[in-house]
Image: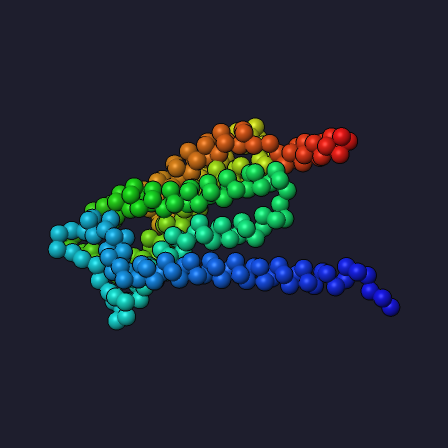
Length: 261
């Protein structure tokens, strides 16, 4: 029996998409590798820079320690790899955008690209807020409340794990305005509904701060309050976004008008 003409096109289309996905992933990995090779020579200096908020807060004469034999090499290596991914994020997101863009409608492209750029900037802003505002405060607090006779000497590996968790927590928390805009755009909720739920969302910000940060009230508050402010900014930004269904209808009307001509 003769097969339909499209039966052979489907596997070819799938293979072409997989090949394109592979190429996009390879380009992203290549960008990470290039950045890593450029930063690796400065790996120890980078770790010193990341550890500076704690080092400045340590008592005079105290220092960080390495409890594992390979830690002085492994820890800066891991940090450099993390930073390479962090710096290469615009390239990674650009490759993701180039992969999915052909399948988007015109009005979806108009909103998707600004959201991608904004999400990268907000993630960087959250990480910068953690480093310049949160770290000095919480490390000064932790070292000040140490019991008398206890020498504060933080392991470099534990410190890296700790700060990376905070970088990710604040980076993703600062994506809250993007999440609000997406929810309004997809029709999941509206600005008016979110306003009525403001008290619950404020409580949710403090719960998120409790779950995403170390178990101390200072770091929890330092995450919860910016999330609250970002929620309010998200409401302002969402006022300028039309729900996708309404945009689809408008585009369909324009297409019908164009075809009628």
